[in-house]
Each structure stands twice: as structure tokens, then as C-alpha cells.
Image 1 (cartoon, rainbow, N blue to C red):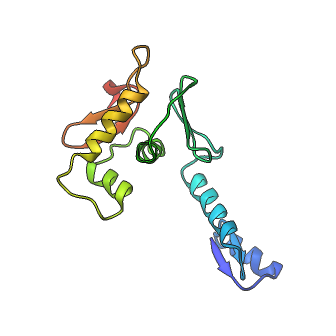
Image 2 (tube, rainbow, N blue to C red; image 1 turned 30 degrees about the vertical axis):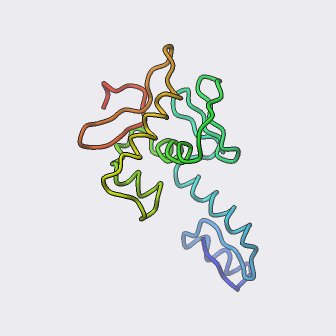
Image 3 (tube, rainbow, N blue to C red; image 1 turned 90 degrees about the horizontal axis):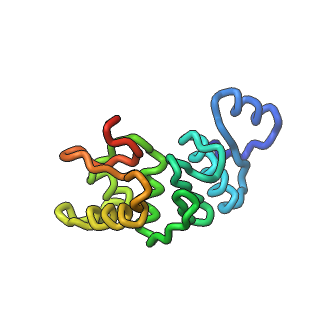
Length: 152
């Protein structure tokens, strides 16, 4: 995204042709910049629609709603943040430190088991007897969000 004080059509065309995905002219509204940034991030993750879907799991970021197989799943703010991060990276092995850094930025205790608590709680809420597990632990590597563990 380009922020510029130039608003003539020639500059706009040049910026877009040079590779910019979007632009705003100064002065700009911060709310509009945030909304445009979020749209760019969704597109970067290959998410054209607002909902994120992994198997039968559907996450609606604007409403912070989660459903699995059509059943609503209430989550705490941290559980939601963890699940949404994983859903943006389905099938990717995410290390404990990467997940903790996402949840807490830089202020987390290295030897805490808080991540394991959140993952355990998410598993309990997402999985029922009639559903296949979605979150798997890969010993020494991290966690992955995918239906079939055998394919890992």
C-alpha cells in the first residue's frame, strides 16, 4: 500500500503499474487505512471472502464467530486468536515459539505451559465423537491444523 500526497491520475496509474496493490492520498482517514490494510492481508493469504474455511470449520473474523459442521463454538479471545492464526496457515507446522509470539508479541514466559492449555481447550471445543480431530501435535516440531494426521 502506498501513502502519497500526489493524487493525479498519472501518478495513480504509475504506482499501480509499478506493483502497488492499493494507495491512499494524504490526508487519509486512519479507519480507511486499517480497512484497506486488512483487505490486503486477506488477499495475501488467498482469502477473497471474509470467512476462513478449513474442512468443516468456518471462522468469520468480522464477527469473531466459529462454527464446525454448522455448530456454533464459543471461544475465549485467546482461543479465537490462536485458532484464526492457525486457520490462516492450514497444514503448516507452527512451532510453539511462533504461536506464543503471535499470541503475546514478545512478552511471554519461555517455559510456561499456557499454549498447551489453549490447544487442549480448543481440541475439547472443536472435537466431538462424530468429528475427526483438526489440531495435531507433532512432537518436537509444533502444531498443525489439518483433518488427516496420516498425511503429515
